[in-house]
Length: 260
Image 1 (cartoon, rainbow, N blue to C red):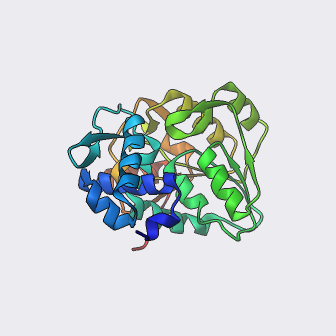
Image 2: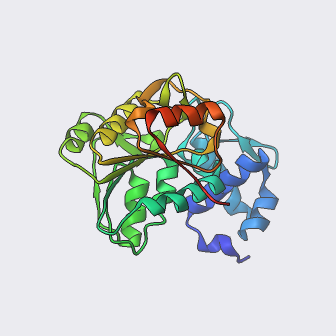
Image 3: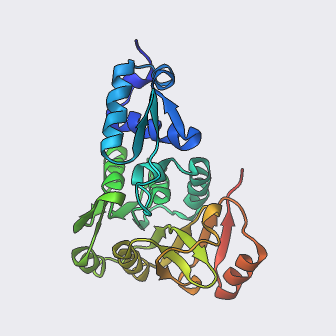
């Protein structure tokens, strides 16, 4: 059997399986094999690999999203969530990028979506994510990978080594995302080591841009990254409620809403 699945690396095929599982909740071996154009045995191996990583739970004839995988979503699952919104946000955020800019990015999947749109642009990037570095290497975009302790759920680097290096770097613009935004707590994230790195990134930048899909408004996570007055621009896919608009206006935040 031949099909588009034969052209995908195992990691890419498994990411597609995760996307389908996030949409359907339960995926079947036979349907996945037909959709991806590969043998059922290949799909079974993929499902076993995803189950070993605690991302999927095997059920008769297929698998489903593992609801017991913890409060911090896996990178693979987050990468499939709200994909269309992230792509719209990335296209809009590109309007903020100028030739010759030095850009810094957090390890969020929304930032990664923007990074993947930078091909053929005359920019230099600072990244803390393995996936970002791999993407930029294939796009032939110059980049600096800042390393430290490896944080597996986000495939990123955190800790004092990262923070120390970021203190010496001064990008023109920083792009970041968060688990949520609330008027009470600002931009928040679940993992405190990620919060510390995002804080340092934001403190180093000339322009701070939050990439926030509309599902994040009104949500809070454990630690505050930054208050609204520490952000210059918020790029989102749908305009939030009036209370959020008023909070951004009071803090002097420019709001960019992506076109359909």
